[in-house]
Image (cartoon, rainbow, N blue to C red; front, side, top):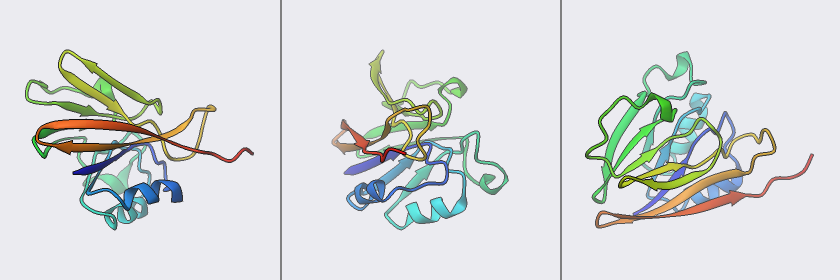
Length: 152
């Protein structure tokens, strides 16, 4: 199973990101979507699991703050802000979060922590990133995707 992992789109779904979404079986979004039209666009590409970010206001009332899902034997816990994890993560393999706009892929105490960074509007000269992951038989492999940006 091929999974696109993104976060912090902030109202912008770049054409380069959409090319990756076309190849995904499932999409995980770590919040700060900013508008319903982005959710609608994402759903065109396949099953979508999303959590609400701090910038997702009234329109996003129906989107959960956190979510736990299992795909191909790998259990994902999703939350926008890593500091807001209140749950016991004993039965979780991967934590997907966003908020900082900084790419993170680190293993700590048996948990894989993934922040795909931001693939929305560029800010603070940070790179524009997302992830593609391959999941099968309880194992996950993650690839960092850097989206080129135009100067100016």
